[in-house]
Image (tube, rainbow, N blue to C red; front, side, top):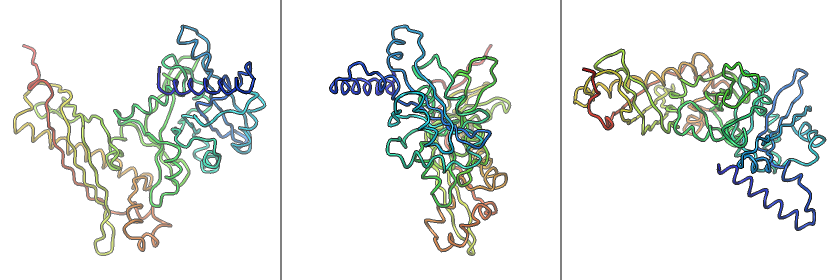
Amino acid sequence: MKYGVKRYLLLSILCLFLINLTGCWDNKDIIELGIVSAVGIDKTSDDQVEVTIQIMKISAIKAKAQGSSEETFWTFSKKGNTVFEAIRSILTTIDHKPFYNFNELVVIGEDLAKDGVMDVLDFFERDHENRVQSFVLIAKGISAKEVLSAKTDLASVPALHLVETIKSSKASTRIIEMELFDLLKGFSCPGKNPVAGVIEKLNSEDDELKIINLSVEGGAVFIKDKLQGWIESKDLVGYLIIINEFKNGIINIPNPHEENKFVTIELKKVNSKMDIKFVNNKPIIFLDVKAEGNIGEQQGPGDLTTKEMVKKLDEGLEKKIEEEVTKVFKLAQEEYKNDFLGFGNIIYKKNLRYWKKVKDNWDSEFSNIPVDIKIKAKVLQPGQVKKALEPK
């Protein structure tokens, strides 16, 4: 059983114990309806806010472990002019005040994100019952309500399935692991616009939406508190390298023996240093990347362990990393004209006098600053084989 579910079950037992102490032995409301696992927020066609909550059915989770097919969660939705109003309206449906302290996930609809999210996130920041460690996802091409209504066969509760997917991102370069606290902090950080995680629907002909038909990949780029655009999942490698958040992942480079074949490098260590230097009172962006990796797979024949081949692999890895980070710089400087990389924050810390001059127009200034990229990469190990097998 997953740790998150165990935690909820323990909470339920404690709640039951407290109920027994007060003599309300038959009151099951707080157990069955109290624990919120996810919250979704959408903008409606009449400019209201629609809040959807996903609540765990603890008894059904226990029964499912014994083979029951009973649904393990409820979803409830209400509209209002504010998030607080919509959440209070939900009380007319479920008979009991929801328990938000263990909420794991906040999903924000695309239309609402484009209008600006600070007004709706104020509730989560202000109310002491909310959990700012909840993960945040921006729903792309699908409503938050639909996401929270999707079912799963792979976990006890859909929200916990999504949370486990996000947590597994340490072995992936396609997911942004963003908590509500970090998003709120990002909106107030001088010289850097935040990038949140994304969830979208895959092509599916199924009538019933399931979690397996949803993809948690890519990044949602904000300018101030408004959604501006997207970073495709394939481009997150470069983004994570630039901001020095690349934990583990793979990169394909050409096989030096056969250019139309690939060698997959598992990057085990990547250190990036971002800096701004002033030359003749004008800023220049510097990015220094050092990377190490091992051969994870080889297509095509040939021995890659010779001195000559190792050098070519190093050069190929350096070239590929440079291509990846250059794509993201172009996205930031040319397409979005948005410093979601955080170089403005470096200026804010290093040269406050200059920052005060440019802060009101920083994203435009950032778009015209030259970039100097230096990459040093090394392939260390070939794996358990020295030379790929060749068919005879």
